[in-house]
Length: 207
Image (cartoon, rainbow, N blue to C red):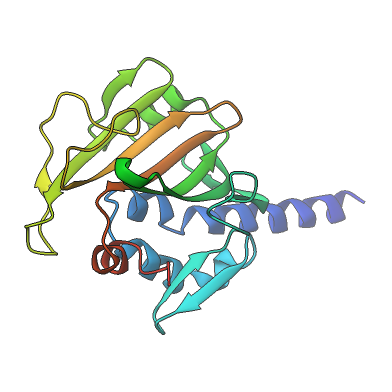
């Protein structure tokens, strides 16, 4: 009996430990398309947790039922993943078209821990406090519709993020750590004027 328990413990521990080796958090935080290559590179491990869809031969994404529906734009993993002290329970993928206010795309992870614990664990990120224990942002960038498609500038505006509307003829991109009513989210956002060409570059998983 004890031998069986020990065997099960090591099987469980090995499974959880292997999840730590998947560099998803590190690859998400810069909010670049490389994130989808990392998912592809680790697809065999990730398929233990969620439905993985492959596209463009060397990229993949974690599928939700419907990114345009707030009741179906997230999925909980079959079993939680761990990253340092954090427990990652699912994936979030939202798309909204708000007309004159712009288009908004969010993608990232649902994390069980309190957002201040998440912030402290991800201390390699330069967080900016927007609302205590409710919202932090990092790596804010901005571009004009007249910029080259690859160009992003550091956004030095004092107020940026999902609580505001991007300036006319601009697109913002940033990392968000947000406490929402039902879940804590570590997500990237691209918002404002998002052309088809820019969307294909930044969110190649959206066909």
